[in-house]
Image (cartoon, rainbow, N blue to C red):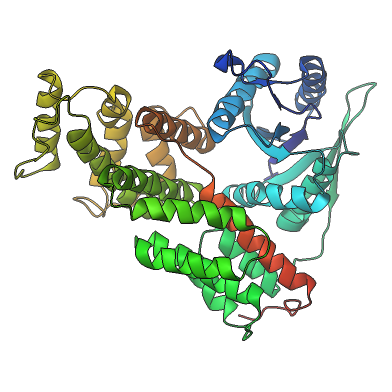
Length: 447
């Protein structure tokens, strides 16, 4: 059976922050439409002339690094719709946005592209990573090439399309197997959010140099954080900061988050804990760790429910106390009564999201699994198709829809998703690369 292609196309038109975005938030970005449409024509011609199966196309665009996380979801969806309109719905388009600025080096692009390609290599275990050779003079294109070759090895191919007759040529590359050295193993563990295993691997380096002490403490901080031990996590992040000379931005941001998680102001603390649960959820959605996702999905639903009961009251004279209830459904009924009686008002986006059919569908999958009232296993595809309500979509799009929905719910609570965990991962990988450059981690890893 012929292997399907996972086609990669790099667009040369960067997405910039619009100067009019402050006066008109709906127009928060701009790009060269003529260049985009011309390059879309090249992609369309190639797809129409492919003789090899190709069901999904990954499209890469550069994005101004100052564009917010909230806008990134919107921009990805916008370009996926544009590609479908211009090319057709025979293919699924998955848009990847790569942050850039004019001083980025090849190393910067490799660092930002690596998590995207790691996710693709995890999701597509048999397909050929087929990169269309267009705009190949640009550094981000070359970074996709180098990282694609490293992660997909003998599953990498180049696609050439003729200007004259639109003939498509596929050239496969036979790379040497990637030896799993210390850094490669460590890198993969961080991209999979396996901080505990990464910490165990770090013990192979009995060294008291500041960079290793910084790595130890940031890993221990994340281990404690994922176990909801925020006091210990705060101690480790403070200790980590002592050993860093560069890259402190992620650590400073994390200190602020942990302070909020430990705040004596209960409203600040409770909201930050909701956001923290969603940070965990996004991690587990990325790596398809469905049990860990569902445990936190259930808990964050309760956390938002009790947040509304406590802080959405129309008067301080209304009691925030919830009497003893036999089930979470009775607590929901109590909340509904308070809304009906105008004793609670506001945060309708979060309220109706909790009651939505999308959330109910995921809970139904959870309740019928070994995490609920049955012994059935959980299939990621079944879970995400249940969430969106239909099966004619990819898991990637269903997950993106979910992340956009929780961002909307958080926005209603006065918060939003952030890139803190991603920033911490980039800091860890950067520190490990500094060790590699020093010659500390060049030996082949032996399990």
